[in-house]
Length: 115
Image 1 (cartoon, rainbow, N blue to C red):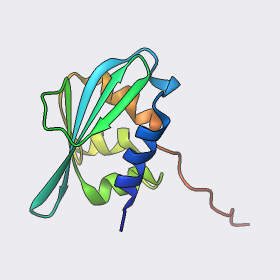
Image 2 (image 1 turned 180 degrees about the vertical axis):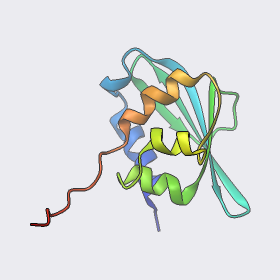
Image 3 (image 1 turned 60 degrees about the vertical axis):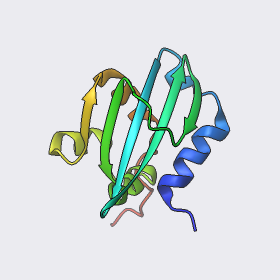
């Protein structure tokens, strides 16, 4: 069974090129924590060309985040910048790639307006 986090990274890998990252040349490692275990996702970006793996390599930027929160980011139910400001997402290394990467998360789901 897949979750929103796995689907997000799988879709990113399938796209291969992401125009929103055309000016980025960097590596970002996501340490996704789920209880006592963690999963690592390594995203290598070369001017928009994106490769995703489960590598444990050094990265320019390391993001540490709970899986449940990443699931909410991947489905648009949470905002990455707001979560960084709240301290629920830890970022080490170069900040700019993480700021640009957060634009890949979807916006909030549409809801019916109350009248």
